[in-house]
Length: 191
Image: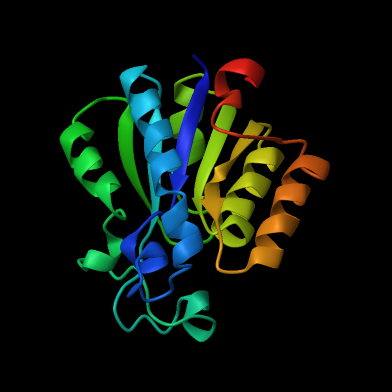
């Protein structure tokens, strides 16, 4: 297949109740659907990339330093995947089609080798999940669009701490980026 599932920032700091920059319950509510997708893709031997925010302690030069409290600090539990997804990743991270990728900006494409990784595998379509819908998922989708990828967003597998921003981003994906916004059950039907 020429598609890849991208799991954006689904970490303890962004999802757990005590996370440093948590979206809380909305992020927790997507765990089952997100895990279902990940398992399906891993079992089907399709590429899954976990794009995970990486920050360094006391980095006052990073642009987010002035916008948000410290989060996803290297070597902390805040960077681990939320809930049962961490264990599932640890059980399957040896597989060639399962990849962890550190990122230091909102977009999973900014300053990473994601575009090269996808092009080497002939991937033309990315399927987006994770948090936050209106920040990192949105910026990743915008870069994917500008790089010529087709985009699919799983509505029940994205979330934000800002419900208004979440809804706006879902509309933006469809109306401005030409993405397909689908449910989990529509994977087989529409894609």
